[in-house]
Image (tube, rainbow, N blue to C red):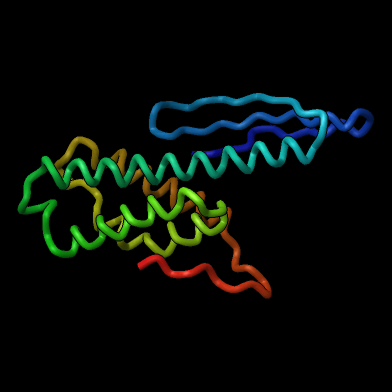
Amino acid sequence: MFRIESYKVCEVTGVTDFEIQFNIGTGIKEDKRSYFVKEDADRYIAEMKRDYILTMFSNYVNHARILSEVGARSFYVTPERSAALEKCIKANRYFQNQLLKDICYYIIKLEVDLRMILPSPGNNSYQSSEDRLLDMIVFSKSVYTIPVDKKQPVEID
């Protein structure tokens, strides 16, 4: 969950006040700030969005990687799951130097692979992982729009 709870620009001073709420799986956090210049506030919010989705994706993929190493091999180590996990691990490395919109584009494209690496339904972390995945997809769809007169991002297969 990532929400901009409030965003106000004073018409007299130009001071921009905002509050962001987000949850990367450790409970809801609040970030209230003021900037003298609106563009600085917008830049900070964009950086927070990028950090949020990178953290969510990285935590999700790392959890799946750990389960593949220590979980029941018959469930976690199949050719399909292994291929999906490897694709997500590569994407996680690739995302570190990418723009927010490109990261979100790829997360949407990776949805099938991300679902493939969900924990076993009997695992205690299944529901929280499914919730995290849904949050990432909803967030990514809210950020990504098809660029007009712009080449689509490159594939990372």
